[in-house]
Length: 418
Ligand SMILES: *Cc1c(COP(=O)(O)O)cnc(C)c1O
Image 1 (cartoon, rainbow, N blue to C red):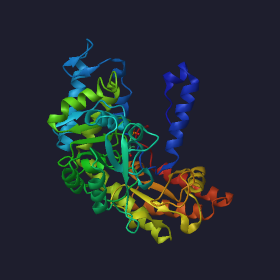
Image 2: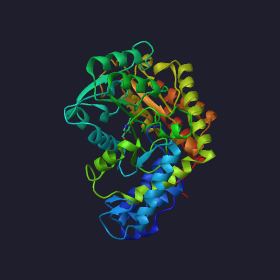
Image 3: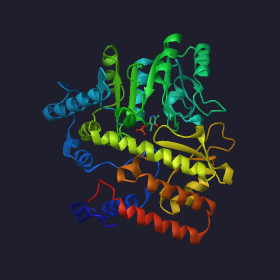
């Protein structure tokens, strides 16, 4: 696929220009099924590449520590306004540099060091920041992990309630990075109330689906909601926090000066654009297509004898157990990357294999749906994956699959480019 070069950059710094060009070509010529990724549109890209990056704007609109913040105030207020409307939230902070930063700020606002927190175990689909040992959330707090039921592979709310009653956490965290079913935020809210805990819902993966009204919103049930903006929401890399009015001062103080210095104003400009895009009817159609594509992908895999965790998907991703074909997630990831199909290896719940060579792969449809892939393309992609995984070292099959990948990619350009 022909990619327009950034010509000014190419004159000034040919090395960087060459790498950026290669990355654009890599994206254009590969099928991205990494569930946490997406392709941003041109408007978000332009706002994100703006010279808003020059401006120091520590503080908040109308309360800055620097002069010259008139436009920074206006853009941040607009972003706040839009995200509050999108999620019907009382208060929003759009400054966190990422989803993980948003979570760090929420912990800083709500907890003391040493408090007990309860989040979904990483090995069952939770995120690093939900209490993993290697992360601040597991180092500074006493972290209790909950998981899914061994049979259904879905969240077992009775068991979560039992664990919460036993450990009496100060904070319960709901949300996940590789869980394919609806999360019952209302039930989480009741569990938290019952044990006197606060509820933090991390919507990093599903924010776009919630914004489109296709997954229940946590806003009525959680004291704090955090998210990243680059996943299903299809914005720039970044984060935001929603909370009740009463917690606004604590949340804002935790972000700045608690955790960050100057906000990334160019990223906030791009977030504002993303939030406007997420309010459009086309965005709802996009999310419907994301879900339909994920369901198709999951059922095609099942039809080919692979096992889909939790029996299927309600959202944008599916977790696939490859043990029926005797391949590790790592070998599958490598074989697919070699032919231009990007997935990531992933542990499955109660995985008998080690984390580096787990039993599964995670696949997601936000990025390919942005390019315009429909269910017909998903069926074709599923069959290419199955074919490749059946012959992982076969050069002839590899070449064939790679040609087909290129052909599909050619028909569906990525929107951020020409
Ligand atoms: C991706 C993710 C995050 C972190 O987002 P970053 O923007 O990468 O820091 C937080 N929580 C969950 C559940 C995620 O999946």
